[in-house]
Image 1 (cartoon, rainbow, N blue to C red):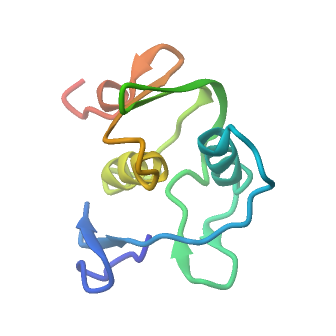
Image 2 (cartoon, rainbow, N blue to C red; image 1 turned 120 degrees about the vertical axis):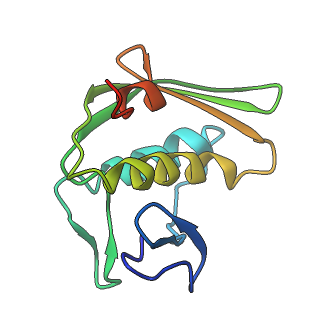
Length: 128
């Protein structure tokens, strides 16, 4: 996430940020979506991704994969653990960061994410 980039570098999201992709090497596997999400979760506690200067909106969270499936073009990602935001601007950052991982694959055109059985958008809804 390029914080404050105002969509200059990529897709505009949230509080004037840009969603940017990072290429990561993954060991060959049939479960490439699971592996990609796991790579993101390995960054737990890392506010900034390496030397890139890119913000990791999930750095406060402690999440793991319960289940992942792609069925009829829909990625279903079931997570478990603790989801913590760093403030209101992290809400769209978290949603987009997780969705973008799944949508990078040409077999995926929709994404449903749950955390501890609750839809991600419901967990992050400020209306309570």
